[in-house]
Length: 65
Image (cartoon, rainbow, N blue to C red; front, side, top):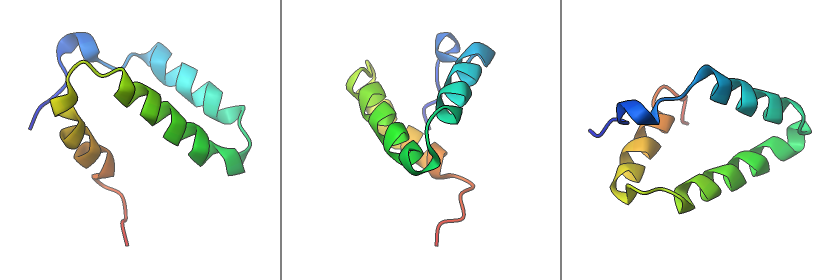
């Protein structure tokens, strides 16, 4: 399984930026916002091979029924 390199760590400021952005969006629009953000992030990936691993990691620990 690929893991992010040390220069690709998620910083506290990144968390705060994302959390604050989500808080400003109406609850019914948050899912759309996150989908659009994911598409933009994927479009700018330099390591396209990492995407399947990241999808699996994002799905981990979710109660998928």
